[in-house]
Length: 342
Image 1 (cartoon, rainbow, N blue to C red):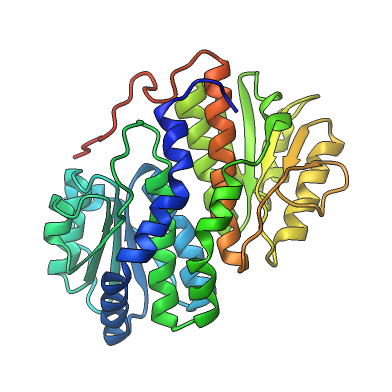
Image 2: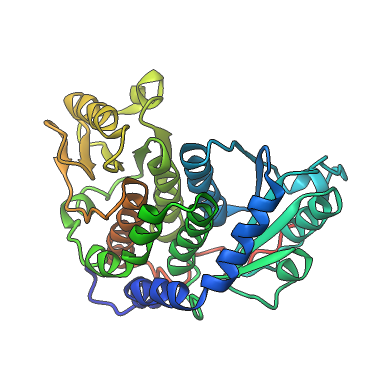
């Protein structure tokens, strides 16, 4: 871990408390929204988001499809804000995620979908935001102020809030119990030592990998490396990386592979080992690897919540890498906390 006490580091350490606060105070909103979803009986869901929030939606897309059998379509906000098209959304559920709830394009598309007949649910850290105003239901994240530009605790609470909603829709007692137990696991995950992987992130590029729900975590990891460390990173599905991207792999090329205790774990481990065999410095969140190096991870009480602890451990590592490179992770160049896209 870095010696610098950055806001990003402080907020990573606040993740367990933020999730505990969400679990303690968010139940009424979650259950009411879940009942509305059941009453709607949707044939499909729609997600609306950008950046890290869109990665949270990708995770929830897999969760919805795997747990409920309900497909999720990600609709680009520009469909409404730039092209002026209203999507026919009658009988669907729209899940809009934005930590600030202020971006005009997210707000505009959510309002358009509501007018077209969708049940709209806003997941936001600002329950007084414009997004909250245009939604049928609001799920406050209860994350508290997040001052670092790099979103960490709002990303994790978005994952938990959305997953909790789906678990309540399904009335899945086992998953709800696993979600309730997350704070203790997240506290341990924030302290995992990934310094072996951090030492290899010193060049100009790297890959992150995942599959299923962990692919969304890979996307988030790649964004955070670019955002905080000014290093190019590309996220690939473990099923796709050997189909072309592998061509740029050379000796010592860094790769971080995310795998949960799910049906994709072995296939993801096999892809990690295949890259290691070609000379890459591969680190994976699974012990099923034989050539890649297994990273310390905190498993949870359910396979679909494992990626949430994995991204928390990653956040601790990437903050340390940024600080070691002399970069302030709280204020990445060219960026600001709230980006209002039209």
